[in-house]
Amino acid sequence: MSEVRVRFAPSPTGPLHIGGLRTALFNYLYAKRNGGSFVLRIEDTDKNRYVKGSEAHILDSLKWCGIIPDEGPSLGEYGPYRQSERQNLYSLKIKELIEKKHAYYAFDTNEELSELRKECEKRGGVFSYGEHNRKELKNSIVYGEEKTNALLSEGKKHVIRFKMPKNKEVLCKDLLRGEVKINTKTLDDKILYKSDGMPTYHFANVVDDREMKISHVIRGEEWLPSLALHVLIYEAFGWDDKPFFIHLPLILKPQGKGKLSKRDGEKLGFPVFAIKWEGNKAVNGYKENGFTPEAVVNFLSLLGWNPGNEKEIFTLKELVSSFSIKGLNNSGARFDPEKNTWFNHAHIQQITDEEIGDKIIEEFNSEMFEKSDVTKIAALIKPRLNSLLDIKTNSSFFFNRPEGFENKDLKKFKDLDFNNIIRSIIDVMDKDHDLNLFKENLEEIVKNNQWGFGKVLGLIRLSVVGNLSGPDLFKTVDLLGKKECLLRLDHLKKTLSEVQNKRD
Image (cartoon, rainbow, N blue to C red; front, top):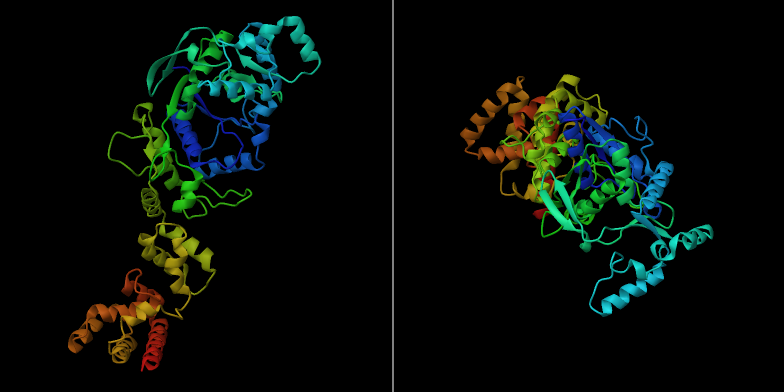
């Protein structure tokens, strides 16, 4: 096999959607698996749809995920890597195609074409510009060289169209989907150059893939209907070294039919971007929602690809060594937000306690605990984390004494002799200098008084944590220390007494 060179070619028309990120990932994995190069090319020929800040968002999103291009706008020998900076090349290539009689100038106005469409629709048909009617329209095939040159000299507005061959069978090959033959009589004369002097995707991407020596084009299946045109452009130039094509399946909505969209994320409350998009309406991405880049990459890799075994948790390095085209699916993959969160939980468990501890220190900027104790806090809360944002909510009670309590939690103890129970808990805790003996002595006093052990533990948990759920209670008590726990128990006793007095 010759050198593997793949490209990810996004358009800077907005933030990088999760579907585009997956396309970039699969290109990257294939390149690295085969010792090749991953090229980033910015396809910014559509001036009307260009969005400021989009290119930076694309680059930052890839960087956050660890998908680093080998070539791109800032490095590489096949540049420039922005299509807007490659106009001279496109100009030369389109002239070559015109000279070879595979492309022609078309001077029909938008208004004229719109009228033709309406007339065709009235007759129950669909208008197309092609072999069956191009000699009846306003183009260089009809006008001839002299009139065409005159119109061009006048600055007459025009486009350049591909001259579709008549009744030709086009063999289209896709490594994932196999071979298919398409007859050109079903295809129209696509625009290769727009009236603003910029090439369309169809033309520019073929020229750039050839010039950049791209060996494999791995892109979304929405481009599959355009494959025949791209093959014909290669053939029109006389290039017989076409790349291999792979069209990836769609990422489907979590519910219902169709492709995953930004609206689905907004509706169901999950991110569809890697990082925050600072456009007209700022939208948080996976990073801001507390996901690790490793989890995002792992989850995306299994949307449309199967490693061939039961393994689910992968690092990026492991994905590179496992990835193959054979593992790709040719049907759409449904996006599952719950599975997405599961992957994040799994990858958070692989973060060291020391790293989680550093995040806790950064969050609370407190000197209440030694660093070694903060590491213990991290180990205690880590199994409860589905998101890095959960670090704050799961550890805040260590640094901030609970002041108020939920009424629903307090109501659980309204029929309990809480004054006597809490006083006994305080006595046991105050007498035991070694908190390791606290549980043993507590069990004894509960047994002697025939109190429910669950209710007693609930009172302790509510006092120290602020609610009835949390990490291991006795480890929590040990970390907080006797003095702090006694203060919190006393505060809960006063609160319950106040509630009872109001009821009475």
